[in-house]
Length: 231
Image (tube, rainbow, N blue to C red; front, top):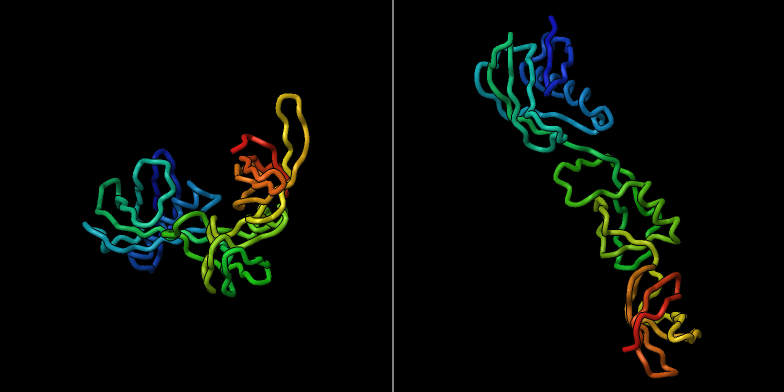
């Protein structure tokens, strides 16, 4: 016996669940729809039936109809269940999302160097994950920028998300910054101290002891900046 699974204009032919129960049949039917509609993400999804309603108890080859939108279902989602071209009932599903996420294997303090050896790649459920998880490719991009640092205190066992790690600062509080000053035909360089940390492109204040003057500057490279205004 076989069935047809519908989602919008998409039709997927599905083998019957055989001796599997109704719950398993609904889960398999829903996963087949998601496999066809979202092939790049389907390996990260797991469907669970939470509740059903209507006359679905004896169905072994259900037709599953998701809501007519293009968003990838996440968490709780309700679907219609059809049989023989008639609506038989409904099911409340939980579509769990998983991903390969970097997890801290030790505690880190803010601004600690984070070595890849102190992290582990785990298959983590991210359905209710706050923010975007950090994958190893994200770590590698940060490393190419010159190093990876903790942007906040991180506890052992924490699944990392964007905002937990950062590249090195272009200038840190108290470090020397070479300031390129150009104004009214005048060009020269002076050295001052950064009043706060910042990345390339950030605007910070730099104090120059020789002139006892503070400048607003834009960081252009590691420990280099261009003048914006004199304070």
